[in-house]
Length: 439
Image (cartoon, rainbow, N blue to C red; front, side):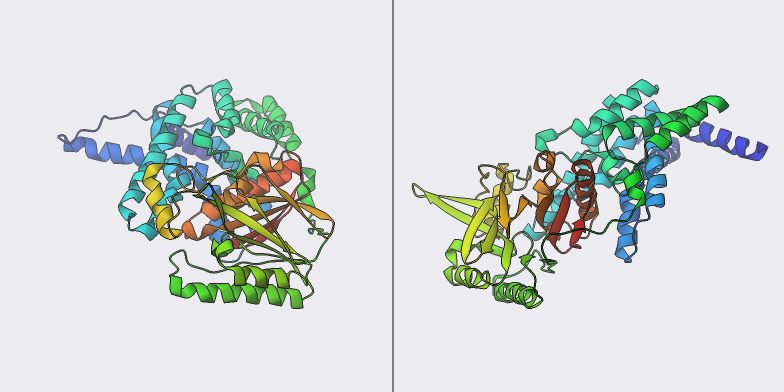
């Protein structure tokens, strides 16, 4: 016991009471202290971000992420935020930003703009660094509590992925609502900083934060027989390979129909061109929909007063009829606006200067069952789930970002919202695992 106390004392001095030595290029004696300082800050950041990386690793070797492990690693993340020394807050935040969002610029690989990827990563590191610098200015509970509770409301340019608790606890035994998160924060603080009897309050808080529903494995109950397709199409596909992609899509649809499915879901942009320009493909889909309902991602072209508008859309084919739902929540600095990205979109999507926003969120009905529609980024937006839709169809093309942790972050955000709002999510993807995500 004495040895353990000494160990914690040494750790406290090494990590929490270390003084900062200003770095100077002219003074070589500052090199080593600076490197040690940054290494310790990286360790804090790594503990904060350990959960998605561990889940990514386990799933890459076809292993599930155990709930008990997710719970413990999530608690480690909370501990790391609560007890990050205030003189390390920017450096820790900087490394968190890089570990969290290094993938945001990976799509530039396909447009001979690789040189911009490090700049995007650096920007995200600096952004999160400043967020931590502002939010962790005090080491008291009330400030750290407020930071953790309010961070999820930080949505720069509408980018709403700053939800730490989504990848800490979405697949854990703990609840994901704000009350459960508050109880977890208080319990961790009390268990680490308080005396013996006060720790009991921390234990009670931790027990109250548990979600009893997570102790039961529930199989998804679907009202229809649905086939969810996972495709393996590289983002740098050449035009001459489009015929093969189209043929594979039709093969998936026909096979799903032969299996007796009521409905088949293909990923976002499974047909990476405006269907209106390919009437023969559209006609074939309408014909096939007499035997199976088809939900598939494609582009939609609309011409008004000689002006062409392009939408990222979900097409629904059922009993020979076609309808489309356009994407409303566009990816900041990807599908929407920024002038410097318009040449990228034009090059890949046959002259498109950018995507237009859909007029509103959409639902569709198959065999009397209603489904909320969401396209990729929309599937991680709170607005999709606010009315607690029982079933949500999400189509994604993750080829832009693999290999990276982006699909894991996306999966955790969807699981987070599925649990919050009681929705079952049917997720069809390209180049990452498709899944049925239950509450």
